[in-house]
Length: 144
Figure 1 (cartoon, one colour):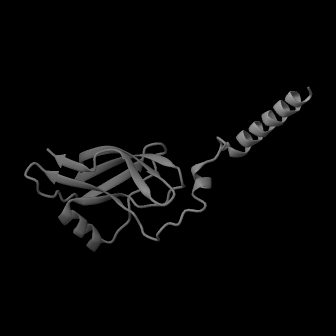
Figure 2 (cartoon, one colour):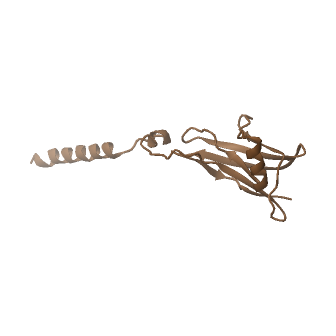
Figure 3 (cartoon, one colour):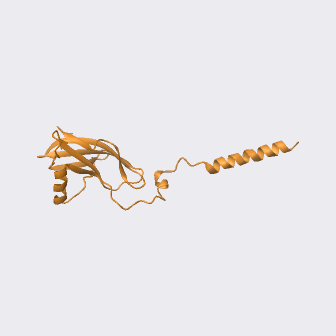
């Protein structure tokens, strides 16, 4: 009876071939996954909102966003008119800038009034195929 050995060999080879074909490589990155993503051409901004104890917006004189890893200042540049608008809302851009797909950054937000640091908070942001996302950190801050 030669049938069982050839059949077992054929079945074993077939099963192994199916597993090899269907297995996804572990070294695939988010960049590869994003090659076919269709992303809208919009800019996503993550904002920090600062209020005081009375729930009123806090107008900072200035603020900084710093990449904790390398100390690079990533503060979003804006015109004085735009900054005044943000001050009225107590809203300040944390990040809008370019990031590589799959990249994560640890950021430090610092707010100043009369050149004195009055508030700071840490954040982790990342980018998926299309947009920058907040991973951790509270974007609603209360100035005590």
